[in-house]
Length: 307
Image 1 (spheres, rainbow, N blue to C red):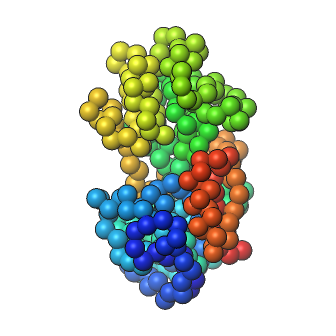
Image 2 (image 1 turned 120 degrees about the vertical axis):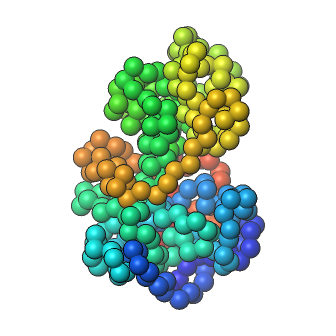
């Protein structure tokens, strides 16, 4: 099979197109013929060695943790799916090894979700990590209809999902974003605030009494977040582990097929929107990583592997 790989940690210069054996299908696994793979910042952070303190790498590494495609084969003890089923998954493994930027990938059956007919492969591949992370953060913060919630980077993949889920729960949501993305946030009911110098003052203009909870999806905003929290307020971050030194929670998310299925159903029903900025061919993963690193994407980036 064709796959994008890297043989050592480094920059996008390490990425190349390789020809590798088809992965074997073990017990409680399925093999997916990949049609689309989602790009997330963690993919290029892992490539740079940023996750080495917690995850071993078995080189050559195939990057990618998000996938949509069709079941190609099922292993023993995997009755939930059959060949030909459309599926998606947050396919993170416990080591950096056989990721989703390939024509085939094996995934634990518990991590896989059926994709409704109403959901395109592009959207299905863009949703898993971002959607599950958003859900996990909101649950960590115990967001309810009584809360006023601040979301840092509310127009990004995780933040945009979190904003919609929080609004659906009845919360009042304020989100930071560049001015180019303010209309996008207004469309879903978020009060947008421009990030950058003077952020605390702008936030106090729209929420003079502060916030019950803050979700940080960008990092570098701990001082502002703490200053804007009401007494007893809750703080969570996916980028800044130092929040735990100040009573907050640093959040990672587990693969979870059942919860991903719920999110896909929300998308199919029109209650959760996933914006895809653009797609890239498999051989153009370096360009996709560069686009992700630029921070200029107006939605998720997706790798088109097959039809």
